[in-house]
Structures are given as structure tokens and as C-alpha cells.
Length: 336
Ligand code: GLA
Image 1 (cartoon, helix red, strand yellow):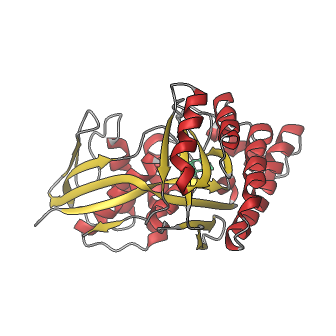
Image 2 (cartoon, helix red, strand yellow):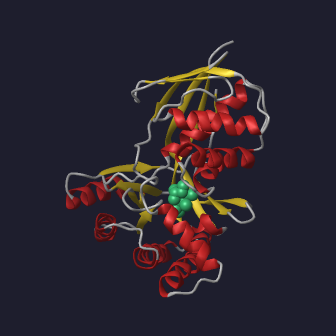
């Protein structure tokens, strides 16, 4: 049988940070950078990439030695799909990614979802989109022990060109929110690689759960205040997009960043500086995006100015950063 091509995008979160750990609202957009998997059915799972050092060879049910690199994600996705009843059909596959790793654009979620879509397709196995995203979310935990929320995998599945996806991570209801035409998503990587595994992500999750469970010291009160104010900001940003009141976005994004800096304490001086530079150089709105502790900021900018703003921010920041001017793009699918 012939080779088929599958794609899953990375995501940038516009607003709603850490809220998916406690059933809150998030507003990510899938972007036009992602992971492509060219796959043909085979007896075993054998994957290679020109970009990553080692290849992956596993049994068709995901068992075998996954090593310490990206094979862990492949093995974990395969095992999670097996638990949903996927027949153990292997793939012979090549993987290609246009996503920077460690920049906060969810390269791991894109890999998980692309591999999941490919494995389901070659085995002729149907999974509804949300359970597929949830299987990929569980795979992240199985692979590297990161207790992430559903945002990244759901964005990779439900993204749509020109839209952000509003997800209520408690009910899992989701709807598209059209982004204004002529607004670009500018992602500026601080160059400080973020590793969720070693960061305080899991610690924040514990704190948020304690805070919601009635814990009430000063620190937990601030953590809770972030979640409450952030959920309100998600609603306000959605309203600003829908009512085309783009002048409201600057304050909302700035307040969101300040809440992440002071109440949740997940920003870095580099992220704080990039946000300041983005406003100084004409972004409509800017804030840290993703899990923080390094990674990227997202800025909204008039498409015509986006490259120039990105260039000026990078020049002001120094040599370590890099910028990606993205468009909101479609979610995971088989490419024809
Ligand atoms: C990471 C996780 C998401 C979410 C963000 C923070 O990207 O994978 O589930 O918690 O951090 O908003």
C-alpha cells in the first residue's frame, strides 16, 4: 500500500494560561508550522527523521525500547491508542517538523497528534477528534511525565484557518472565534529553552489544585486570583475579537502577562523584556504564551507591520531570540 501524508500543527495560545489545569477557558490558535508524517502500513513501527538524531523502532502495539528522545512520544501515543482499541498495525514513516523545539509552540503535541492521526489511518481505526486529543494528552504524561492540560493537543486537532479555538476545558465544549483579517500572530522566542519536565509546571498544577480545594495562604490566594482573572480575560478577548474592538486587546494582554508575572510567577526577565519591546515597537497586544519559564511571547500586529515589528523587537533584545510571523491555520488532517 502506498505512502500517505499526515499533518498536525503547533499552536500559539492567545490567552488563558494554566487555566486548562483546573477546567478553565483557553483561546489557542493552531499555526502554519507543524509536523508532517509520511507513513505506509508495516508490520512494526519504524520512524525516522532527518532532523532528529536517532530513529524509532517499536512493535506495532508500541512496546519495545523507546529510548530517551522523540521515540517516547511515539511509543506513548501508540499505547494510548491501543487502550482505545486500535488494532496493532505498524507504520514505516518519515517525520519532518517545521516547529522550533522548546520555543513554546507545542512541538510535542504536534508530534503526538500527527503520529496519532497516522496510526489511526493506517489501521482504519476511527476515533472522534476530542478522544484523539485526550489520548495524545495522556501520551504526554506517559512519555515524559508532564501532567499537561488538554489545550495543546486540542488546538492541534480543532484549529481552523483564520480562527482561534475557544475551549472550555471543564466541559470540553469548544467553538471557533474568527480572528480579524489583517492581524498577524507574531511569536518571539526568548531563546531560553523551556523544558516542562524540569520546570515548575507540575508544582503550579499542585498549587492550583490546593487553591481550588480551599487552601488559603497568601501564595495560594495569588495563584487562584490568576485563574479567576485569566478566565475573565479570555471572555473579554473573545468579545473584543467578535465586536472588532481591537483597541481593548493591548490592556487585556498586558494584564494577562502581569498576572503570570506576579500572581502565577511563571515569566522570566527575558519574557518580560520582550513584551515591553513588542509594545514599544507597535504591537497591538503582547504577552508571554505557553507554560513560561522560558519559551516565547505572542504579539498581535497588523499584518503589514508584523515583520518590521518582529525585526525591531529582536534588534532591541539582542542576538538570542528568533521570531515567527504565523497565521492561524487548520488542525490535524491527512494531506491530499
Ligand atoms: C503547556 C501545557 C498546556 C497548558 C500551558 C499553560 O503548554 O501543555 O496544557 O497548561 O502549558 O497554559
